[in-house]
Length: 183
Image (tube, rainbow, N blue to C red; front, top):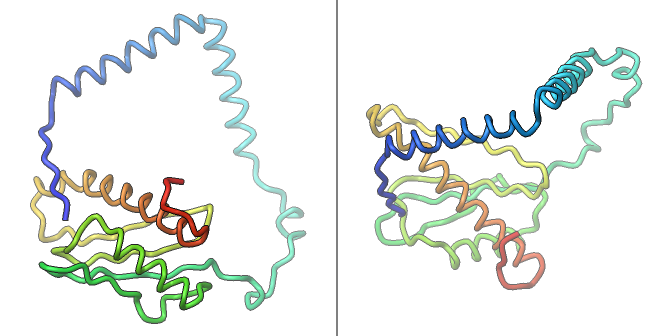
């Protein structure tokens, strides 16, 4: 479990905001009126081009493959069960698609071995997706949290996303027989 202590700073917020305003002003001066107008024209042109509807002939010319022939994205989900004295990590039954049993067990074992935590006070599901194009969606029941506690959710999200990148390095080491290295 990780505990992050932080104190919001109105002075830091103002400093960041003022710095951004200053940067924008300096960039506007550097570009000049002509440069800003040119960028504005380029942006408007691009937005207009992106708003054109795709011709029906293009959409209907694309073949629709047989769903049984479309390979699924390799994935599996592992679950960390709440525990106060150990990291209970296991693969969710029937969640493995496209990975061999040996590969799945090797990844879970490395996650267990290299975990930065030794226990979790709440259940966590980790879905491993072997893809270069990833969309991560997380659903968390926040009904038991107060409004003040909910303000800390972005910090939790940051911590979890950093752990995911750590898991990617473990995955890389399993498939390349190398020591973990950040990708």
